[in-house]
Length: 394
Image (cartoon, rainbow, N blue to C red):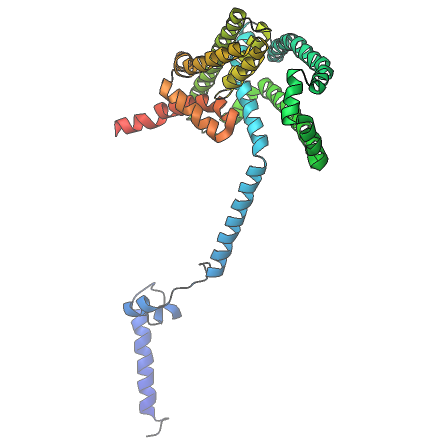
């Protein structure tokens, strides 16, 4: 059949006319676009179609991120360990500044500016240190002079076979053994020990300078430091956080006051004991024990050992009695005096006091024992304000 016949042309015209009529019957209906006329995939096809993976990291990226995080964490730990001594000194400085804040605030309420209040507190401590040095330097000087004067006499007695030291030398050959020890490398060991002692003294002096300097700066700028830290707290919670912080600082100051009271009791007991049994330098030893007693865990022990050694000047039995006295006093202080004073000052149970001091001393040594009780007080306040109300209400 010829494609150009009139019948086919009429059929095609009729088809086109009907299609156009079908679209023109509905007024204002837009013609379907190409995307709308495409057949949509079935539900099964959509379920099995693979999802694009452009937004998901690969295993290499995940492993690289984990390795980088582990390396950064290790470097952070190593940095903290290297700076642990400095961080400990900074912690001690902040604790001293916070402990002295009640005194500075009291002077401020009397009308002194903060700078003058800090200067007055520093002057008071400088006066106490000068008084301690005035008490301790004369007996130390006398002991050194006595040792220097006694060395030639002791050497003469070592060569005298009729004296006690001479008989000991004949029996044990002390001088010969000392000379052989010095000749076989003992001199280098002695020099190394002297050098190590010098380095220890320099380290102690440097640490003391750091603590004093940072303490002064923190004492002078403590209100500004607190306001800066409070700005990290949302405004709706800030008043409550400020109240809790002030309560913690107040209790830390009372703890320091309680510690001073217990130290004063230890120093007074030492002075009375030395006067009774006849141990010399009673005032200097009492002052020394009072200062050492402010160091938890080992302070009173060091003070008792020093007083017992000084008591050897009187006699060996007096030294033994003095050591027994300090053992009894240490037990009474740890389990009777200090827990009761701390409970009165910071309202902490005696068991919590003992456990906190032992735990802090084992973690950070002397400084850990010093800040252990204030840390326990702060933890108790936070628990009472934030944790226990929620658990009681649940």
